[in-house]
Image 1 (cartoon, rainbow over the protein chains, first blue to last red):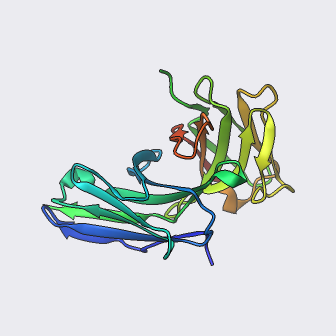
Image 2 (image 1 turned 180 degrees about the vertical axis):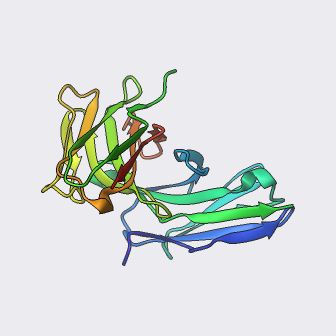
Image 3 (image 1 turned 30 degrees about the vertical axis):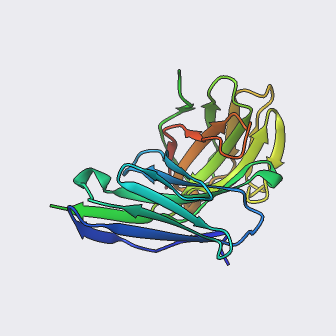
Length: 111
Length: 115
């Protein structure tokens, strides 16, 4: 089993749609979680950290379920500029801050 | 604040040749990562340094890959000899390493093509 697994995608949605991405992780000792965004042929950039109580930043909401070892990202009112690959990242601080990436979920927002 | 610098941006080599990549992390960042990202996949951790010590290199193919961070600042990643399957983007990232929610900053990567 992969350490971090994401929905395979791609997701093709119209502008204004709501879309949700799911991610599961295998190491129950993992301590912090992130969503990164990667545009085509660019480097990954941090989108959101995921806090245990869930957190929201504008149109983006991230949630964590430690019991199920599951992380989600919800994007509301999708914009064309949201088209990118979304990477789920898990950090195990006890392993010296090892950052493990999922395979990414591609989102394409169409007019 | 300057970001993570990587060079070269692009490299094309023949199989069995050697190649080296360079990374200069953000000033003061103790933790440095090298990732390999094959087209269509997520970044795969190759090696992680904390200052000049190796924290994790469990997925580094040590028969052909090597990395060093001698003075705890710059780092180099070398492949010798290269194989066709090494074609990928090699990403360097750095963090302060100070806490569990510390953000990782990435360089623009080196795109390697092995022919």
